[in-house]
Image 1 (cartoon, rainbow, N blue to C red):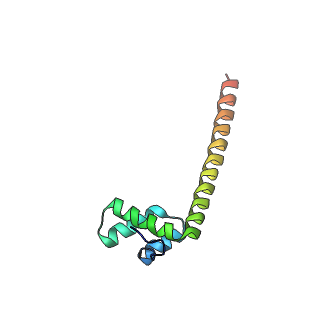
Image 2 (image 1 turned 60 degrees about the horizontal axis):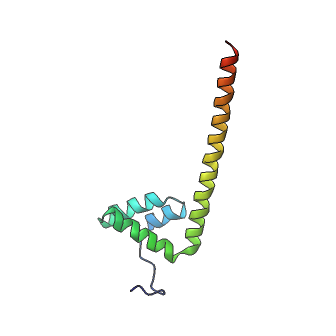
Image 3 (image 1 turned 135 degrees about the vertical axis):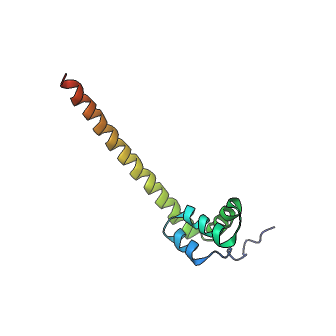
Length: 93
């Protein structure tokens, strides 16, 4: 059984740097390549590292939420422009 005070799993510095930039998938890829382990094992290691670093996990979650909001904004703008284009195209007939 894992001890709550156990140290965080050691990750390659390049993987940690990717996590600091919000690139979880890249961090998993790096761990997988450098350790020569499977995808699930790599993801589990990165997840364990994030669990041991709640500050970093909160920053990642905030960055992901911000990215989702940005995507939704662009989607709304695109749909509004498409609707306007469709309206003007049908008015010309």
